[in-house]
Length: 332
Image (cartoon, rainbow, N blue to C red; front, side, top):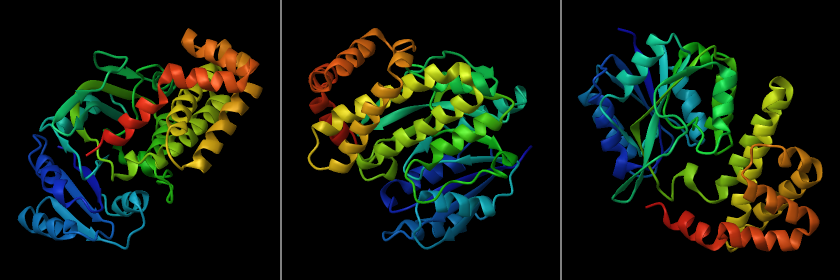
């Protein structure tokens, strides 16, 4: 039985940490090395880590470091990883007891480099299941996997991914960003020979406003991550360029509509308007030929003719005020 290393970056999550760790300890696949990396928490998170490390000393290693962000904590954990496979999880989430076994079985069965499983959102007392474009397990090459990411209801590269350890040999998490896992995932998929996706929702992803990955301000990082994907398509997968442009356009317009109804965030509004105008000026005809839905193409046409009228149409179509209210109230 192969050793799997599970790395848990931790920062001020004392209310959720026990549930996370217990759901890892109770996994049906039990040949695990669980690395808890406290990133300078100011609550009782590190005390909880130490208690679990004593209670489950055969599985759990506990470390504490100066606060440096999630990426730095992930990279720190990698230095101590002994497993053949690596899994990162967020410390405020929890997991079905069969999650790791299912991903391990998939990665072995298909001789894949990366295995993903499905997830569902935890919204207060509700469980909301993610809608994806596949209904059964699929194994694919890197090109097909990258294409599936850009589809409407496309596959998500976070948060539930089991990788061969060598996939991290020359790919570390870029420190100082809030969406570091997206770009790392894109690089790893590009590097992989095979990727297997299991739509079964084993991962319970908690929507929490104070989490770094859920902040309204950090959503701008998602656009930068998608731009990296577009650049990858332009360099290596020319036939996927239109898919990349369409995905970037969807991100920019939805975020721009939301920000227009948010107080402050002027820098983000300016960045998104600049991105949108750049798309209209340099990629308009490519977007019209892309797999965008017809309503997006009509919106782009109106914006191309008159940006001000198009901006108001965008707000009406995507109800930016409601999007903002949903975004801000979604998390606990």
